[in-house]
Length: 329
Image 1 (cartoon, rainbow, N blue to C red):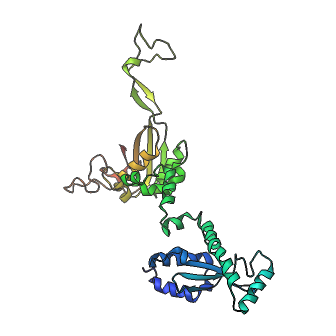
Image 2 (tube, helix red, strand yellow; image 1 turned 30 degrees about the vertical axis):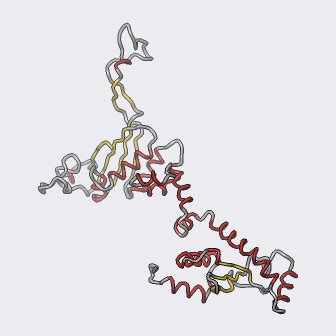
Image 3 (cartoon, rainbow, N blue to C red; image 1 turned 90 degrees about the horizontal axis):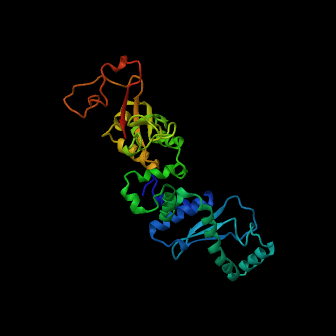
């Protein structure tokens, strides 16, 4: 596998083993874990133990060496039960140094059994809240399901059926808020369809029919003035419609957002998935000034500036108002 700069894994591994002291501890462990996965080596073959010395180190790592039985051995200058950073009294380290000079290492090996558990726990604690690293480097599917739970998609089978499910994770903070707000929807669409300027009208007046059983009928129902008596068969309603204005659109994005365009289904999915109430959504697309072109008779019904009712205008450059298209989502 080659990096974007052209450096291969073999070169990176050679540099890491030759100059381990130049790496931060956690970065070195990340690389060694990646190498172990690539080689099929168990992760528990990666061992870390403190450097047996009382000298004050300049780096986190003293050296990195391959182990004869496979894996890697990291000599660290911190977080050990012996060495200069040990929380134990200094004479413990002095006893180990005396033991080493005599050619014995049983006590140190015993303490290293504890280090084999302590250093991995330290790495796990460091990486616990570094979610991108766990998702990308460790392919942690359990964590992925937990994050998708914020947008209501913790089931992988459910995500597989939705065309734009992978985009929702970026907006987990918006989807986890209750109740849903106009500002949340506006923020979502402004980020998805940049550089559009998004304005949402949430109280669009519309006329809705009055059910027959609720209409005024003399001697029967709807006779209390000021309460339930209405003349006619329709009434104004401001709670069932919203209008989404996407303004200052460049021409390419404008055409992609039109019905049949590549971004239209994405717009429909994001809006309907965000809304929790059954609202009628009206979309108003406004072209950036000077972007609209005169209608063309190009002999095809799907060419630009030729779809009647969507992107056809006569001399739009002379219009005093923004060039816009309105449709129901």
